[in-house]
Image (cartoon, rainbow, N blue to C red; front, side, top):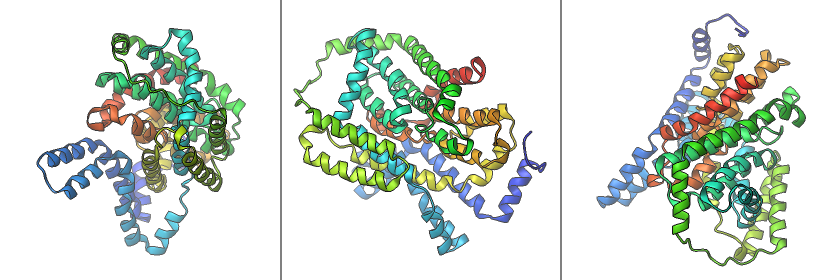
Length: 450
């Protein structure tokens, strides 16, 4: 064991709670927020029942609101703030909320708006179309495979949130539009989440869990690629092939539907090269300045102005979805900052094997970037690659099991939820859908190439 103290874990946690009882309160509120995500469908069902019974629209709106997964962590900030004020006072509350770093939520919100635009999708679609034509032509099954293998790896260059947005939108246009069944839909979403979570590990700047430790542990792109890159590429391809074989009959059904159905193909206005290059420029600017909030916001505001001027070359702006995802992540950042006391205590006591599997599990209940950041603060991990690799590998591998496990996941869910029953993505089927690719990735990272 690698603990820096021999005090039993529960005794240590008890001591920390005794030192500051608010730690327990914040953990309980965080747990309530997580449990709330599992009951979203119940609230949405209640809202529909009230609508059918012609009940007060105010009550209907409340239950619809409670059923929106993107607002959950923001909603539970209300009891957190009230508890903070009661236990710590107003000044301490202001100090805590003022010192949270909301760079990532702001970045994800803006990159999602830009990546969802018609010119960016046009470029991504043309690039992936090269592989589609090579592997079998314009069919839902071929698009499905190419999107889920190529787009996640884009994340190592354009960042994971942008890759998630592009992949989800292309899946919605090329696959989900043909109405796949529920199990295939959940399996596809789970595979997308897992592949995107590991897809940013070819470089040191694109995946938030790696970015959080890169400076502290002196990781470069060459270092990250040599230790994670080949494993990631193998995992993405093998997981996609397995699901392709597993769901081959249903993919064949989707191919037949695509032949039978004539989707309204609008004669879209040709995009001028200048418009395409302008949008690519905004995307590049946002990626390069991802950690400079002021520059990201400046670029985002300028982009909105340009998008409004050239409105006729745009698809509908994904403003609502982007803001909801930003709200989700901002709430998660605020809650997560108060969970350090128990996560660090757990991590510091695990050997590399336990740390690996512990990270896979812990990241399902907390953003994986927060988990690796806390690991970078543990002295036992300094200059110890086995421990560093174990916690980072576990964090990125577990990033597909839940919506809250990886920052880009809410973006994918927000885009694709309309294809699920009652516009709700249920946590348990999602976890089951991500389970096989997660196990494949565990085997490759831990055993085949460990």
